[in-house]
Length: 554
Image (tube, rainbow, N blue to C red; front, side, top):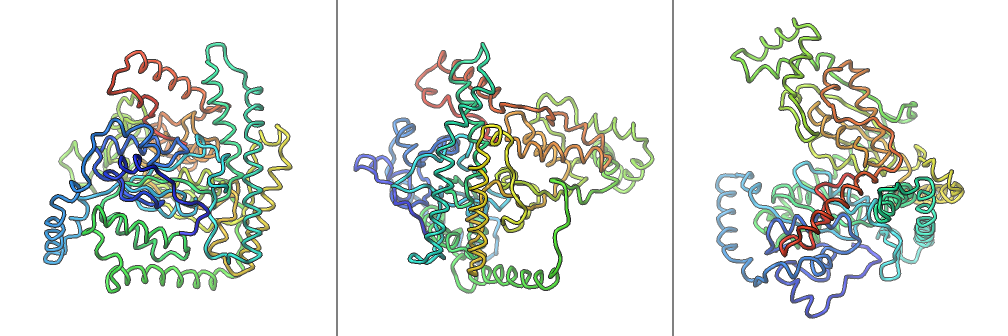
């Protein structure tokens, strides 16, 4: 994988501690071995909030709490299991067996373009380094943390121009972070009951939220992944068909590391007549539809749209949910229940939905699958930073268009109020110029690396009402980023007003339409209280873990 970053150095003693638990010491892609599931989960939870590598986090915070285990223990029974799996698969073709074994994998220093490829699948769990908690203000090995595509000739003028533009964007971002935090500290003075730490953390997060639009899509991140063998196989087949060298190189590294822990599940990936044909099919269909789109859509230009557009919904959505809600409590067939629901008044259907949703004490109390009967499709045109957060939702259908500079960019009001509009516009203009130069050079596939995250990208979200409830209530929470809060608030409004599904919208009772100025303040207060409680009750089993939050909504 093309990168400006060398592998991390570890001492002999550190290698001794790492060896039983990581598949290598020097690659940016590695799997976890011989660790309790709770430790792996806690490691990944800390991962998103830390600038450290996963192995360094383990050494600093977990190594002294994990009992050493010989590396050989991981291989006990593996050979017999591999043979058994091969026999089951060859004799019965039972792919579902590959759903029963999984692995934890870390991919470090990968671009934000690559993270979207890694996080495309539904049936995996991902945790990505957050731009809200990890400032990109420190160089690593003398370089800012951005990816340089292998497609750019090492001795070419375009590569030099690319690196100059990247360096300038990171220089500006790093230089403005402290002044922006000072601006927010003045704008939102510390409340009498808040500690200096709470106020500092909240204003720091606000400054990072505001400035993240300056970072390019080439910005490197760390991603923790958990998936079954089947899910990893599907991911690797897609990655091997990808036009980007970074993605294909990462796939090769992932395959090598995963074969150290779940080899039998990935036997087909690089077999020419199996996985090879599959990847070829994916690449060919992509190229063919690109050619057809270019032919059919020649001369078409995008029509003006709002940031969020509800493009499709079922007018009978509430009727169908009411019928589905009654299904398990009756002995009537589905179509008869639908006729009954159609005869109901709007008030009667609303009463059914209220009874089915029940008394929800918090947003995690979600009604059952009847809410999956109605579906909404939204077309969204918002900044790439917000897209990164919304893209990680699993159970909906999402597709996005290539990231370009054609749709313009967003500019937070605070940037202009603080007096940094010129710096913001300079970074945006340089991003647009670099993107255009890369496209003109015939390297369209790598042009998204050049695009700043403040630029807009178009994507659609199609989801049933149950998933819409989850996404909207989570992403409108007061501590969320203003960009995606705005998108999800508008989705909620459109469900109630444009679709006319007022009872469904009402069931989403934790959708928050309030205006919040310092988004992380309430959460930082709660975190300080939890830390204080943990400190007063500290014992050897909790020490060092009390700062792990239960969720990451950045």
